[in-house]
Length: 163
Image 1: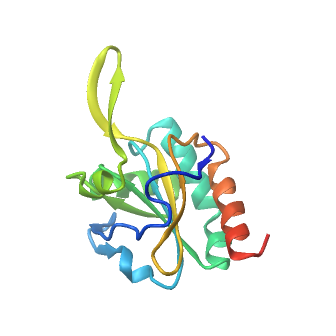
Image 2: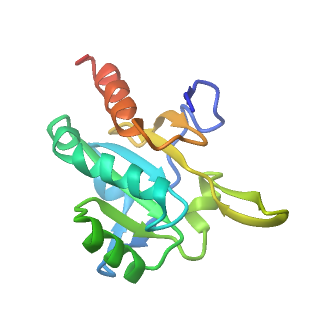
Image 3: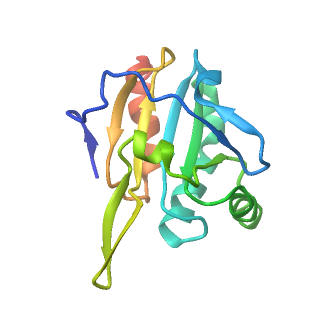
């Protein structure tokens, strides 16, 4: 899906959080103040779309780092699940665990879903671009994984005036 220009979060401070990474160490959003942050929420480790998205962001990690951006993936999976996911696909991307859905809810990415006629809550695939001051400058909702990392990188370069 295309980037939203009217999302409720654009122009607002990104909700702060501290979450465990794949190794169980705590990572806080405010530790990236002064850098751009690409914060993406994804449904589940080791599912087809999530694997495509993670591998594409992972392949572009060096390019994101070169333009001063940190990429962070968040799902409701456990740190152990993230560890297996990263090992299986040789990912060096920072994956954080939000098992109680606090951060997912804060970014309005924990949504009702329907599958096979059954209703449940789950993670909507969303991405937020956060500037060095901690303000959300772009939001993509219901992301299609293929090519999304490139789309985010292009907008980031545009926002930085390097495109």
